[in-house]
Image 1 (cartoon, rainbow, N blue to C red):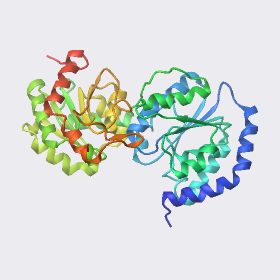
Image 2 (image 1 turned 60 degrees about the vertical axis):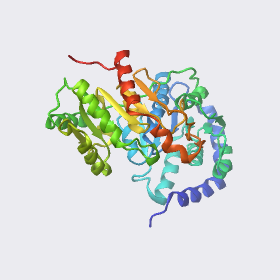
Image 3 (image 1 turned 180 degrees about the horizontal axis):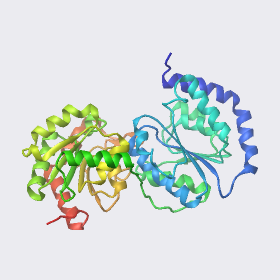
Image 4 (image 1 turned 90 degrees about the vertical axis):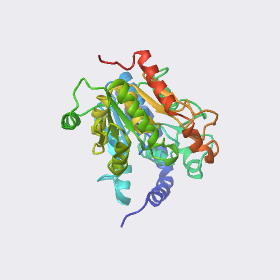
Length: 391
């Protein structure tokens, strides 16, 4: 029998809260056994969103720079975990959707596994009550968690299990906020450096894919991702097609349409809309471990504000981010190799803290960004020297 996440959460929340007096005393007792130069550290990021996971990588980086002998465990779930699977900063990557931790009893094995590890520090990056339970079961004497201005009832019932709560202010740069949690371990003023790593398998698959489509190393390769997790965030395919045509004419660009397997039909429709459709091809059979190898080969990436834009930034790929509905400054790329296009005359609709504007203006926000805006951003990246044009 399969149990959904709320049932698993409340079942073990009840058990852990009943055991909390013993667990809290045990964790407090362990303060005297901290490993100052080689601490065991547990990090609980947002579990299933690519952009949030990439935005958490500066935390892993700074921990390993400060404590090279530390043991770092990271918990994630779903397909998004692929973006972390080759990260050398992580000593143990736990996928809660796979054995032995999936299902109702698997979740119990997860809590027991963390107890046996005996961590020194636990950091819950998002405002997650599940994260509070994981941190408690880690028996870490120091447990630090993010809190948003508005908290759910489940958070209010579990936040007290942490030793420190770090308030997040709407509009604050989220990766920078994540790093601020590390002040507990003496890490202050660290730079936000996102990291994504490639695999040999991904390199091989991408090389074969590009060769089969007649792509050489000298081609101006533009990646376009027409899909987003929310339909409200999507920019019209017709506009993407006009951009692709203009770049093909100006730079003799070849266009890679990047989407998941579920977007195969959409990618095919988009390809047929491009005038020089023979210069475009779809890449829909790459998992996240392999996608990084494909993104690394791009001369330019254009997308709405979704997970792959953060992968592009981490890899140093020049990018244009059609921000649309999101609050500027919270998660959008800040690299000089990326340009973020904000809507005209429409205030933000979404923040990482939730809905902050009028939902009925979400499409207006996205549509206010024009084809000329995107092409102008490309020209600006060329002017900056971020995009190298080969003669």
